[in-house]
Amino acid sequence: MLNQPQQKTYLLAVSGGVDSMVLADLFQLSGFNFHIAHINYHLRNEDSNLDQKLVSDFCDKYQIPFHLYDVSEVDKKPENSIQNWARELRYRFFREIQQKHNLEFLVTAHHLNDQLETFIINLSKASGIRGLSGIPQNEKGIIRPLLDFSKDEIYEFAKENQIDFREDKSNKKTDYLRNKIRHNVVPELEKINSDFLTNFSKSINYINQAKDFITESVNEKIEVLKISSNDNQIIIDKQKFSQESELMRYEILKRFDFNDENEMQKVLTAQTGSSFFNSEFQLVINRNELIFEKKLEVRNENLKEIALEIDDNEIIIPQNIKSEIQKLGNCFWKIDKQKVQLPLKLRRKQEGDLFFPIGMIGKKKISKFFKDEKLSILAKQKIWLLCDTDDRILGVLPFRQDGRFSSDNSEIELILKV
Image (tube, rainbow, N blue to C red; front, side):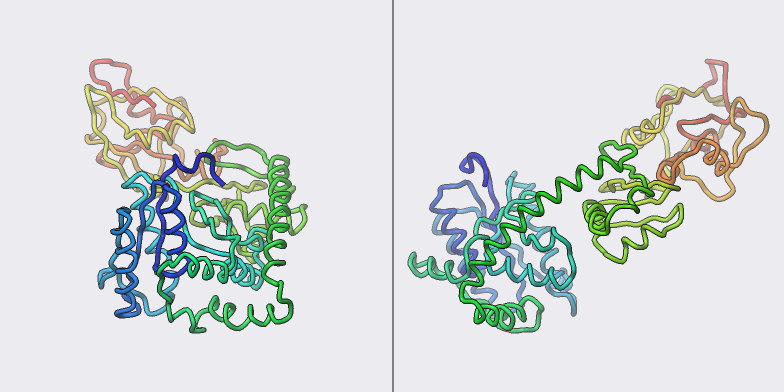
């Protein structure tokens, strides 16, 4: 699964159940460099505390670094969607521990029965080949080494090796979809065929091979449909995209995490200027283009106004904003210090903005200027206007300076370099 695993570092998510305690025991026997993280949600009263004690005692016994998240009232448990809330909380905690202690991989104890339950859930959602391929063994820094082993095999291993664990009684309830599948659906399937789980393991392997083939085909198709691309953006020909099969269109959109089948139809019929969003990408319809752009962790588009400093007559632009502007072009402006009111600022376009472009006669609306420059929807969102404290526009970065404020006298000029 990994090259030279003994040289890697790991964080194990350990609940105290049989799966995670077997996982912890295997890692302890392996001599790997790992820490253990545990969440006490306090959802099962004293049982939750006993789970914590079991994991903590295991770490004390083998001198394993132990990290606890003790859920409190501050965490505001929701009345609904407890599972989603708990999942988001624990993965946020895990990532914080990994970053703080420089642990490369997160390791979880998902097993073959989890894989089957996930397959059935995704089958009911029409989730495509990626969903049907189940839980990946190694993806985005998360490793699941027990995926090929059934729950019964894990129980047997724990018994043979006298590994202590605790049963979560809530798993026997059928309040949640996964538990309903676990207790009501899977046993019926195993009645039909006693080798059902073994055969499923083989089938999921075949599906993963098919997924790999489709992934390669989708990558090749994206290259054919692609108009242009860079590290943060890819532009696809909308007309050619619409002529592809439904499966191919669906898989291409899923590549950019647009997973909703209904959303695909909206993309095909959306008008120019329409936008779609998910946690990682923004999709913009621009004439005959589908523009997929990665979202920044802190998007500069959310900044409405930025105050600027001046150092030795040079206007200082923050580096992150400067990098954004440089993707559109460069400029070197000379501004008459006596004609502007300091301090200067950057802001986004507003309705009715106009300026007097240098080299042109008269004024022009910023919106008309954008249109004449044939800027894409996404490019327009990234444009900054340089203004003085009276909100007069000194230029559109990096395209055109306002001629009213330009200078040819080095003694009274401010310099703007991008």
